[in-house]
Structure formats: structure tokens, C-alpha cells
Image (cartoon, rainbow, N blue to C red):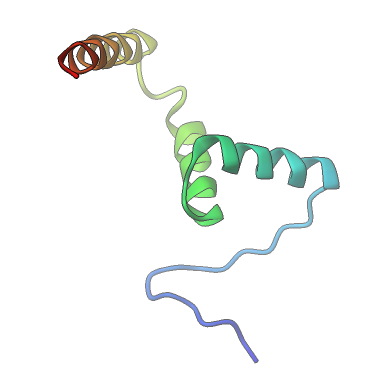
Length: 76
């Protein structure tokens, strides 16, 4: 019986090494996404935008997020 497919999605099958599967499982757990699909899509997004986004912009975004996190922590 074929697997039910969500509209707007495509199924891919990969043959990967056991080590790669273990690394993916560790990434999935550490990143905290609910599904492995979300984890896989996040990794693909990161890799595809890595060289397209100016590193200085990413650094400013990270600094801003850290600043806002500190403010929120000080309020609690």
C-alpha cells in the first residue's frame, strides 16, 4: 500500500551511511524540530542560503536577538 502523501509535497528516498543517519538523528534531536521533515527542510534552507546572505547581516541579526533575549530575561 502506498504511503499517504501530503498535498504540495514530494517523497525522496536516500541511501546514506549508518554514520550519516546517526548524525542526522543527533541534529534532529539537538535542533528540536517536531518532525524529521522539518529538520531536513531547515538543513536544506541553511545550506542553500549560506553563501547568499551577507555574514555581516547575520551577525547583526544574531546580536540583535541576543540583546532582545537579555532584555526579556531581565524582565522575568
